Image 1 (cartoon, rainbow, N blue to C red):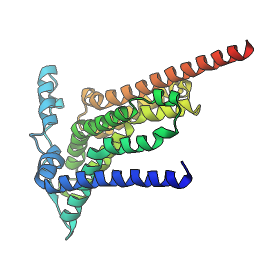
Image 2: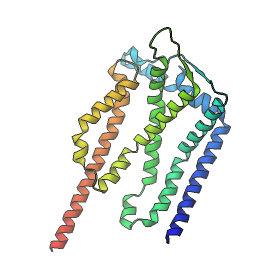
Image 3: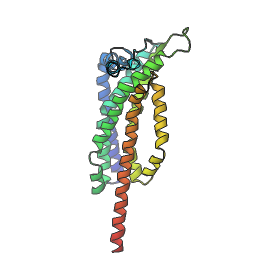
Image 4: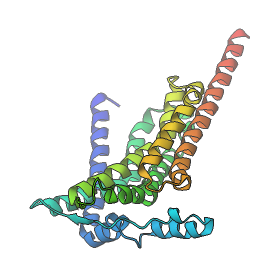
Length: 271
């Protein structure tokens, strides 16, 4: 294919991706009640499933502090177009999340013709893995990180004389940013795969900073979890650390395979 043919193919990929995001966003925009009352605003209510599960877990392990009673605060709108803009923004984010597997597939379809047969075999199932990791990060954020963050920040007070009335734009931006950030963070194994294959990253680098990573994860978990007990912090910290260890394991396997391939090539050249 010529340069212009590649450019035309890229344009087609971008158009299909934008159309998919727009269609999913329009569907989300139509179902406003579900999008806001049952999804976005649900983590601030005591009936949210994460709080109910934590309370049952608290009874099971005899640790009452694990049962979180979400802070009561009022969400207000102070801008004339605030609610409409929040509706538009959240609908777009919802469309982006739902359409992400299709978007990833479109870019994979664009890149695939330029790969060798060996590279295609190594990347088989990549679209599914990327999509699953992204959606797993989204769900982890929504059901674990967001409820803890909302409860802590929504109920934090510098003085009893100051009451919390959270602006709608502040609430929606915090939820969406944290959710998308976790979705991208869970793509760490994919990033490690590419960097290791490119020779930029090695398992020794990851293992060298293992303790630093663990400390950083514990600090993050300690900040976003409102309860002083270690158990609630581990609920957030353990999955993140397991994700890091999974990345280390993947990097080690790829690095070992590269070394074996290099040894085989050197033996062939020597023969």
